[in-house]
Image (cartoon, rainbow, N blue to C red; front, side, top):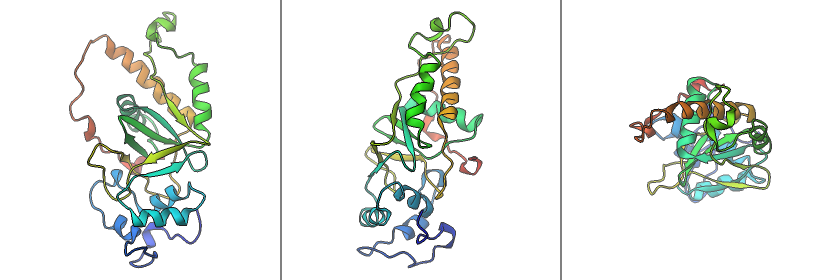
Length: 232
């Protein structure tokens, strides 16, 4: 990231040049609530660094801080796009048993997991190598390593772009929102091996749950608050 952008801990009032009377960094500093779902000034810098012109991107966010944005994938991050329920279960595994996650957002009933560059190319190959299909435990050959199907994963890498939530508020109309917001200029991002591990764990647990024939979702599914300080 360019040296002109100061760390979030050293930002002073008026340090950033405001466009049209809006200081995006002041807005981010003044937010209250769960830090897991808020973008910090350093997180905004990281997001802007995914574009060829970070300064212009920050200026646009200063003009419209409550509007979603569109960012290219492949340089700063890739994005793995999964159905919301499967993605939520992946997050539960990553935070309860694994190394945590990178930034995560939801949009249009799906979950966007920000991942290390190159993940979009390698993860589908790893899933194919694991011979995942839609037959669940029947495809495991009766070996006792029963696993459910993995839903279609949309992997966004070089040449793709994704919609990211607004920086300063959550969408109230069902639009994109942060589940785990970027909070540093160098966030830890899971690679294809970590996400494959999470898929394996969720798939096996789904196969076990299928025997109970439960059709009711767990209550308060959106109440999870992830401790970002645990992220490796």
